[in-house]
Image 1 (cartoon, rainbow, N blue to C red):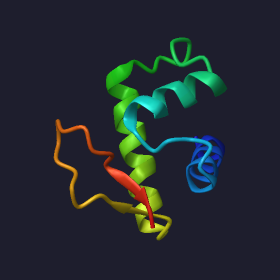
Image 2 (image 1 turned 90 degrees about the vertical axis):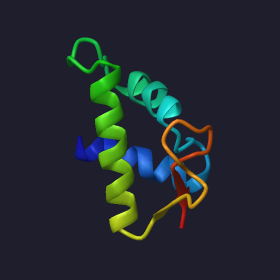
Image 3 (image 1 turned 45 degrees about the horizontal axis):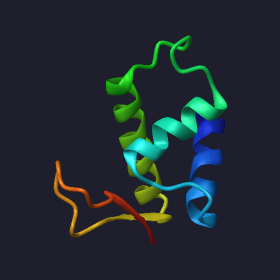
Image 4 (image 1 turned 45 degrees about the vertical axis):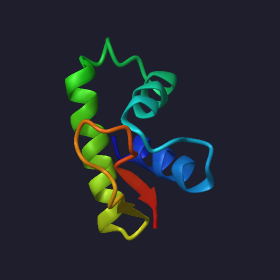
Length: 79
């Protein structure tokens, strides 16, 4: 997963990948067979959030102050 995180965060930072949860699932499916790896929507959501939190901890992302669970705002923004 570490290599996948590096690909994702690089894409988010250079603007080729969106940081949203839905875009994350598309990104993962483009790089690995998520069904074969046993990654359903709930597991992908957990991994997306862990990747986002890692990006925040590394100072690469921030949590969108306008985000609340269930709204349409992106949770993670470029720092």
